[in-house]
Image 1 (tube, rainbow, N blue to C red):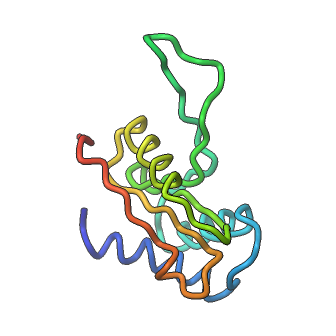
Image 2 (cartoon, rainbow, N blue to C red; image 1 turned 180 degrees about the horizontal axis):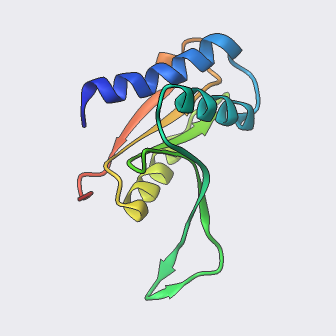
Length: 126
């Protein structure tokens, strides 16, 4: 994926963080980041349903990913005091199910947002 593209995308997260700071609800960051991404020319979908199929049966319960940008990068947003590696596993599952190559878990509840950005890659995406 183009470095300039990912730089512009992550710059939006930094802009939101610089404006709002840490400690707010995840839903606030989601709305603000979606808005900032749109201002910067990205196409953004929020709370995208991800169907779950088990042995050729679509289950009634869907997963919901926070943001998908240009139908190719998934952003899973958090505002937690304790980061857990399971967030990356959750994102990896979304990447597989949506056949996307790249995603970021972004935890806005950090003093420095650099510590809150975690990259997840799906090597099997086409």
